[in-house]
Image (cartoon, rainbow, N blue to C red; front, side, top):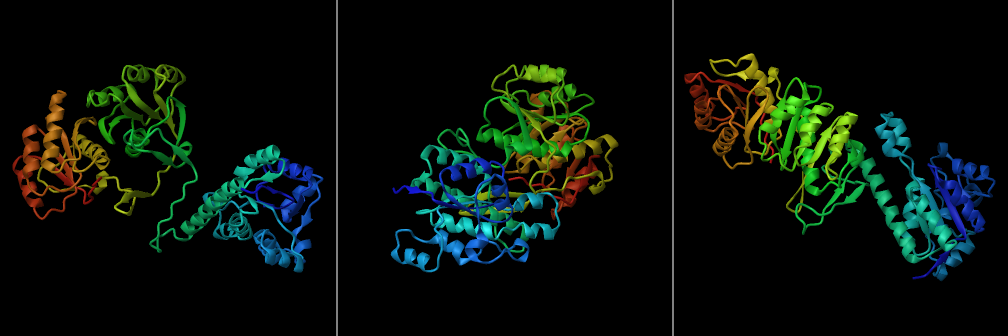
Length: 509
């Protein structure tokens, strides 16, 4: 692989952070520097000679700076093949300077969108010259080094220092790969801004932050996480999160967002489903009652709270082996207690909004859908039976519905006094789900008399309400929509069970 000495550089950047040492090093190496606009002024202010691009092109910056570097003398200097006799001759004929290094940092399009700026401001942050320079320099990596982001300044400076201004083909190819990563991500962000309503049925995902996990679901599978974990959590303690940890954490966060700003609520999750959840006047009691929902499954689970974890709650949690504890905050004393297990992962959940789109692989492609943003409320309920639910039953029905929405289908959720008694999860029939839930509740000594039942989808037959009635369940929430709804309603009417319908199915596959 051939080494190249850098003798000339074009620098045109948005962010100057960390640029000064590079410019000074290039100057020490007697590199001719070309530049434009604010970058040119920055270099001059360092006391370093710089050639304005206008002196090369004999053309001024026009259209308010929209056109500065878009000129054959600039791109010819970048794209020429130094070992190509014809290219070398044309550079000489048209007085085009050779350019060995291009340093660009693009206009901050994504940050401008995120800031809530006007459409006009956002449009002006679509970089044209910069993105073209990056593509040209990266394409011609055989002869040109392309530094395409402020994030790469430090790495390039180290390369300059250690190799004294020389680059290998492998160095240049690596920077080219980074450059095409920058350009493709940039264009994906612009496309997604223009296609906010998905009028063009095209999916473009580009995540710049990636992490290699220990493994995937099982040790023989590779695993990766692509996303900005630090934007959602502040990690306080513990080992690295695994692939399965992340799936459970995702399920926990989505579930607990249903109870944001409610009374103290605590949930225990295992394999993406809640195995315990309770709401009480104190978090300590909420934790104890959530744990009581299934103390066996809680072992090795993910715990999440909607309130600050205090000392009393931390002392109880510390008795349990659990993988992850999530809360909006921890008291200093509680944090000291929970740090007593070195591998226990402690996360502060930031005040965030989860993505509005769900994406998953399917066959040789992907499935995309809107996030399920419907949460059943009292106003959504339609009473369909002669027996009406009491105020406490209505509260429990809404509570059960929120859990049901975040539990794998087919599912039945049983609740009493804002405590999850049991759920039947991921069953192939609704009857199986109900029987599983009843059996589990009884195995943990729950009295189901006066409890309520939530179903994620309608009852095709009255068998579920009959089984529920015999178990002591007195109120039911379901979406309705079966052609045989009336059979379930009739059974409830004959047996003094209250039933409400929401009109909204909550399948979660």
